[in-house]
Image 1 (spheres, rainbow, N blue to C red):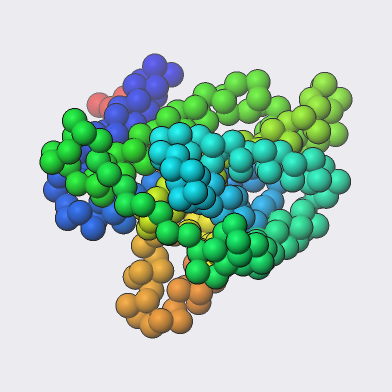
Image 2 (cartoon, helix red, strand yellow):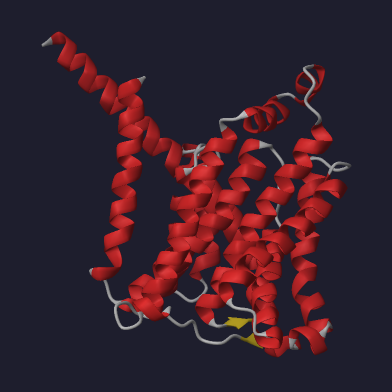
Length: 326
């Protein structure tokens, strides 16, 4: 048990060290792309909480991305609020909307909940375009370029600064989520996912915990959407369409819904798979997403993260057996 814990912490420390030094060995544009990976990983982490832990299906997380992005954009443009204040407010705004949706979702299950959240994702771009005086309509909102803080000015580029902010937040969220999912809250969510009737009989309140899961997941998506808006210095309704919601779900499924590492893998998939597919054909991303989902559902239903974890466990077990024989 102790050796397993040491290996786990060692893996986390190695990944953290790699993330910390990577910007100094890649071009600024590479750091910019990895910032997107971190943002998508945070958003997918919310889906792991919602779908992987509590069993609720959401096809509308692009809407929470939009809330986070527009919160940062409007506060910065109209009120001059700095990003370090608007980011928590973006999480709060998305989380409150998520809690409200969670209350509605209590009456829906399975495919009906998926369709309701799908409708939310479809309606979000049109709603943003309708309130043109506030959101800028189809033209969107332009944000001020990100500036490096005074003490670090000249030492790192703005792309590297946002990279470190994003991955620091991702690290905090991953750590907090790991603790929460191993606590009473996490056990209650897993119990509701596995057998709601049995969970209720043991005193788990489904209304409370399902609503918390929705708000929790939406808050993460709001932070991710805010980071994407800051990175692009632009918030547009078309950036938060149904394609974004489906890409996040695809990344979560391919990465693995039952492991936190799946969020990191999913972030890489959402950012780089379309770029790679477009080199083949401009229409290829949608086709490749569909094929990947079918193949992984058949051959790797637990996702890449679960497959890698199983492979590592098998190698450790085989190595332990060989060591015992010798």
